[in-house]
Image (cartoon, rainbow, N blue to C red; front, side, top):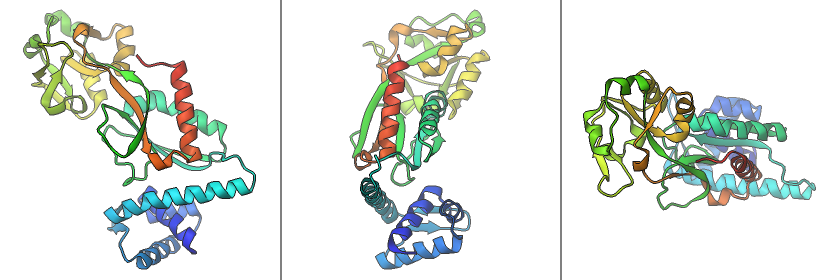
Length: 297
């Protein structure tokens, strides 16, 4: 393989975390891909990938190099398309990650429309509630629902959501609904650890900054927390888009709405030098168009 093809092989392995899957994408043999990456590492004098019998992952040097490689190859591809008179049509791989419920409800329709509009585009949608590091895991765009710390990542806000408290009518029939956050200490609480920073539930109004959440059920899956609330196990905290349909249907009831915490922004995150990618630009434009028609509140 030549130098550019070796770079593409390295990017494919880093993205797929597999030599075999990278070879399948490139339509060459795994041996060719392995040899190309090994020669690239030899020429650089550093290991770009950690290899075990079960997995492939980036070294710190590999993660830094991956970002530079992708930018360089994107620019070369854009230049080639310009010379051919093409209009930077989205094509090739686009890797997106989003929280599970939000991604399935909102991001999947956006990605589906993009794929229908651009026949040469391929998408990988990773739905997970854990925070993924973009460069290290080969992510083009990440959806984050949180206040963002200062970083080198570029952010475009799509909207805001609210943290809300809910319980089922059956639970409230047995236990009196709380009238202040302090009374939550006398209730059975269901906590999703992604919304339980430092073990506290925080609220907006002064004098009710937060309570220590002594959860009867603590889970790392927001869908499990909501299901437990639907089953009458206790009071759950979730983001409003996750439970709105259940509230409208009467399966859950909002509690203490005047104490809701400040809205939480929803952002598209990407490395600033990825803004020039036609794939990333197309996703940003599609997401902005979608949320103008489907505003979050």
